[in-house]
Length: 86
Image (cartoon, rainbow, N blue to C red; front, top):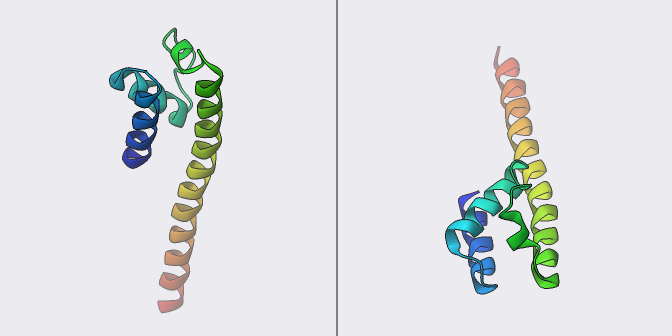
């Protein structure tokens, strides 16, 4: 998550948003909480920022699903190998 936050923070920094505000909004988008604050208007002020925000939202959904799937599959495969050893 930290790498994603840093990458998107740099992108939004180039777009003119302060680094600390960009990080806060990116964390809000990735976690799905708090993006409705007044500072979120900065992320949507221009068409280019709106497009970047949409891409980031889609990316975060895919990334979160991948992480959850990997963790679940790891536990399932671990349980299967543990049961086979008994």
